[in-house]
Length: 419
Image (cartoon, rainbow, N blue to C red; front, side, top):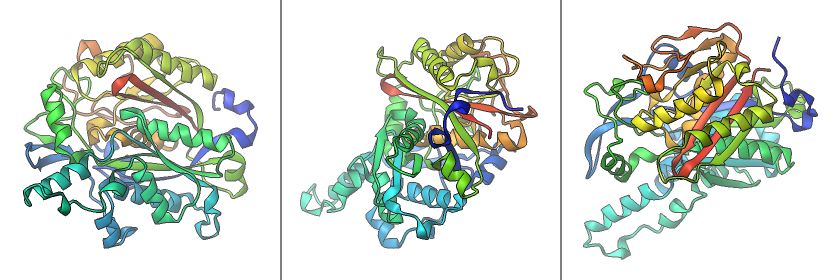
């Protein structure tokens, strides 16, 4: 029997459920492929080279962009748009919604992003360099490519959606933020269907690699598949990755009325801010965010089955998050902790949504996927219930808590309940 939470007392018109999932990740292009990869230990990190910076490592998506876009769409648009368009279309297809007869003025699009426009600006500067920096050769597509709403806007154009669309800039907390925004708009009756999640084209900007390298925070390893190693004593930084995951969110009454399959219910969420540093996390504020989400869900910490950690593989970031988690969960025997970045790298704006997707099927199979590449747990990262290297059978999973934190001290937490 599922443990009760505060959402059980809400009317069905205020209860928000996930009815469709679409994604492209470095190790899979569907929820099933991603799940198989994380249960079988398959990493999507590989060798990568980008101009100016040179050889490095990255999580790279491999999907057919022409599935939902024409060559003209791809040429005119952005990589963030392409991964978002693919994920959003796949999510709608997965949901079973009668799309042809859907009032698309009542569909909203809420896409979390870490940054946008860097890739396109770098590309244009590179191109005009060959013309002695003559700006008459600057692309007339640059402005629509670089406006902040571009990833959500490309989805709207592609799917002929006339409801609200916008992106949510929330650094690496953005995937969760997109999900939270979609739920809030449904509860406000601003839309009837929300396409919500995150998208990232980060690996196509050399600047992100150069910046992390200058901070001593870019992962290196002779074996790319072992480079992303959260919690391990030998972790040495972030593996930058691209991708997108979009969810179809609906009010429970609507989902029931059309007999939709339901992946899970949004039981609680929270966002807050450290307000202490540009990049260094604050474990006290992170713990407050987790506790606020638990309070809103009407849950205690020991009711959570799986915590999907944010841990990026940096020395201080992982240790600080574990400090926060120990303060909240203590020695809870029920709660288990894992990390999806160890398989796919850090997908930035899509991280929160993809990492939730990596755990979502735990409601069906009762398994907590592992954190791979952990040869020796750093004592600063010790957690009772940390699952490493091999998946763990839990039996019934009722609640998943998904952490995503970002620069400038933005924190987000989402709790999903099994229906």
